[in-house]
Image (cartoon, rainbow over all chains, first blue to last red; front, side):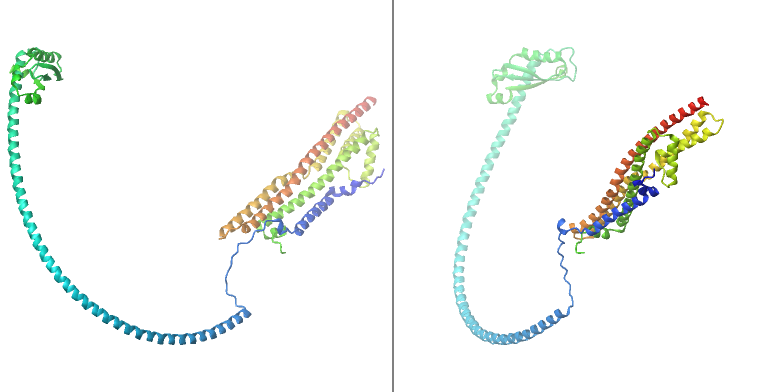
Length: 282
Length: 232
């Protein structure tokens, strides 16, 4: 009955030892894998560091020696250069002086010429001035004459203007007189017309003081009434109608035939009348 | 070490908190794998035992013979698990009660049933031990990894703020570090989740077969007790 059980070994201590061994082994393998695995840079997109150049003075011996040597050479070259420079400058100075003296002579000559030219110019200018003077005087004389002429002309014009104004004033006065007379005539005839109408007007009992009717008559030169309209009503129909009846009854105003045609056209072609009961009752 | 991006360097260059997180995740992973392997041994053994014991039990063997075989095994220092334990505790209680005079068969059955229930509870406990740990690892290690990642990314951005010249080369190592934490969290969580689900289902089925066996064995004992009573 005793039989070897393959699980017997595993099952000792509830199977913990093999479990621990398995787990730890597995993780150790994993750990070694991670440790061993170096990720190739080609596996990743290589990202270049931004190029930052820091300039710093580093005191390294060979460099410094080289620099000193270079400085020495530079110094010698510099001296040489400076000597050459001095010679060059000396030459340049002499040159300059020569040039200056030449220039001075030239300048003097030029000044001489200038002076002569100036004198000639002055002479010419004097002559010019004389000519100018003569011309100016002539001009002044001419201007004076012209002025005289203009003044006379102006006087003449002023006189004419005065005459014209006087004439217009007279005309205006005449016109004013005419207008005044026309107004008088108009007032007279208006009075006649009003009187005629009033004679034909029978005031209704309902008429009260303060009532007012405005009518527009349209007349023809023979004095007949062509049309009559109420422009502004009194508010009382009976009163308005009585006014219209009065106009109709008057029928024609023979007196208007005597009137000047122009005056009639201006004033009586359409003619406005105001009727108030007071006008009659008073 | 001319490769600046080896995984090992990433781990070494990470911030201390990220390193702590990674270390704890590593330990958690080791622990969860210990449990996974141990549970696997225990559960597969129990499954095999269910199969082999049921075969022996239903082979028509005398029950007292079966009990004696078990006793021999115990003497050989072989561990006693599962269904055989149920059988032994039930049978032992049954015979013990039977030998005492004046006990009714109902009481005998009750005693045997109680003994088997106790044994069942013990077996259940053995099978289910540490399974909650796996569930916890499965859910928590992801969060722990995420924590390390967020911390790492935060640090990266903080250092980015101090840079006048932000380039990918500045950001990339930090984020790679950070992502490593999540990776380790997932590495610990995925096997734990799979193992938990698998083992929970297996344990359920084993316990179900235990309970079935308990009922069947009870009915056998019941029959025996009453027949003896009728005989006697």
